[in-house]
Length: 512
Image (cartoon, one colour):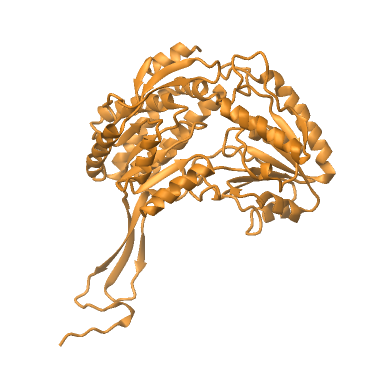
């Protein structure tokens, strides 16, 4: 399992174009950038970014492709996605290694992310035969009404570094079976993942003689490309994943041109651990939720709200569990590794600054919180546990790192208040054996998050359920349920099959 093997197997070169319309690759006349691995700081490959002229060329291809792609019956579009899923299956191990190497998550998580794309392809295939509308009764005799859904056009997808494959695929595969084409602007921190996938998809498109421009890639590190994409009226929908700050900028610009946005932004996720919790399952769920992907998931567990009667017990068990992880930090491609590096120096700085602020507030660092010595880069850190107060500003804001806050509660109503009392509203969980508590947690007066779990952790998304959150998380939904409707325009149709012309609401308008 070497870097060289999977790089070569995925047909990545030392110098790669970052602009493609499917099978065709443009020169990449924008800035030349490098993809470096956080594992050892080495350069993986160089990327030729897009300039504005190439962006326009991609848009032109996408517009042409949409006119043809929308006419393809949805089940046939689903067949193409089925083939894409199979192609990704064949490349799963190589892609999993690439994800691990380029962003730093462990190999098992890299494989899991590729499996998410495979799963969403399977889901989209089934969805291609279920793009249902509804038939409604008309108040007018001899009339019938129904609604139906049509493709929107070009969907812009802005993805983040922490899930460089999965979140893009949630959007692109669903958008495609709905009859849309897409333009992908990936994170500049993980460009090679997008290039590798584009090559795989391009082969499927070529084999099936699909119009050039259905799946498009535009890598641009300069703000000019991103600004142009967001402000482009030719893109009726922008799906953006990233920080809340980024989402505010994107949503305001898209809204100013009356476009649509799907926003998947920050999380500040809590787990309530009640006095009746089964700690045999709670502790592993908390630990994975807090240190998986080195704390760089939007669904990462950030806060543990613990009943005071078991606070010390839970704290001691977490310290014990974290201490076992100490020797499991390392190269993410090593099978023994459970925690890889943070993505870059900025992430490490934010981690250390958060710990400093906690201490300034009077909080207690229970475990960890330092940069580990003896590693190839300064991106390897010891996951931290801290006892805090929920209302502190540092706790209210998301730190994208393995930093877990421990908070006490006395009464269940207090726990719910603490759980909800943050600006974000993505994922939440409760560990309890009390039926009433679990049902209240899931009720109108319970969790205000888009995801609410009982006796499982906050981390992870299961294909088929709509993924997303409320408040500062952005309100978007992807991946499952009826989230497909966000990629389509709704149309209500009324058919008069009578020989009369009755008007709605009984209006009379008789001509002499």
